[in-house]
Structure formats: structure tokens, C-alpha cells
Length: 191
Image 1 (cartoon, one colour):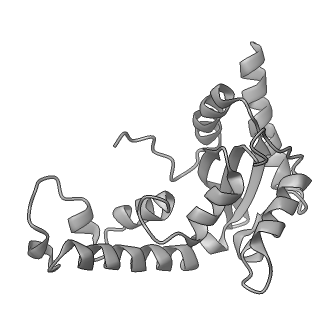
Image 2 (cartoon, rainbow, N blue to C red; image 1 turned 45 degrees about the vertical axis):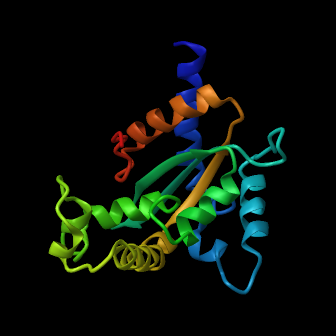
């Protein structure tokens, strides 16, 4: 096995171990309790996971969201970032489709949501066909739905991190770890 392969399998093993240690994973609700400083809590979790700052004084690495269903841990979403604290905040609190990309993917996939048809249209049909009078109205509705998904789904997840400053390794690790853990929401679709 090559050095990179060993490192990738180590990442998967470490993620699974961290989800068994309460000090190395936390619920998103805990991290984003409105009464406390969420940056401080995220940084504390990062340090408990062995984090080190990169040259920009930020934390670079891989993150995994999961939940327990029928007493089994399901891995939902794996991502990477050069600024883990900012990226996690975007997943949990950002209100638009460009920064809250996971919530937007959930919204696009929800066939019961009234926005499903307009978000998945394949041609240039006018949005008024879907009941929206302007792009602003559509975008406002998207932001509201993203916020609902963040509150009702993402905030109930657990999260853990592995810090890594090697960009090449990080990009390979995102795909590998996601596939090994069978992260439900990682599709790697091109835009």
C-alpha cells in the first residue's frame, strides 16, 4: 500500500473513532447554541480532534456530518475547507444557495417541496410558470427554505473534523472518505 493510500484509510479509521469519543464530535445544536460563542466552541472541538492552524492562522481539513438512525451512525455529508470554522458556519447559518450548498442540495432533492420543479427544470421555462413573479421572489423563497432545512435537519447532526494542510491530500481524501463512509449527500456532480 502506498503512503497516500495508508493516509486515506487512516482518515476513515480516525473519523469512525472520533464519532465514538464524545470529546471529538459534537452536535451542531451544541456548537451553535445562540447563548454562547460558536467560534470558540468549534475551535475547542477542532483542538480536541488534534487540529493545528495553517499558515493563514485558520484550520484546514476535512469535516463529516452524521446522525444516529436506529442505533446506527449514518454519515451524511463530507466536505473540505481551508477555513473549517467559516465553512461550518456557512452550512449551518448561511442563507443562500451558494454558501449553504448542502442545504440547497437537500432542497433540490425534496420532491415534496414546492420549489422542486423550478429548481430542477431542464430548460429555460419562465419562472412565472412555477408561480413566481420575479427572480427576487424565487430567491427569497429559496433562502427561507434553506433556513428551514438548516434548523430542522442540519442542526440535529453531529460533526467531527480532521485537520490537514496538504491541499492535494485533502481533495483526494474528500472523495475517498465520502465513498468509504457512504456519505449520503455527496454526489460529486459537476455544475
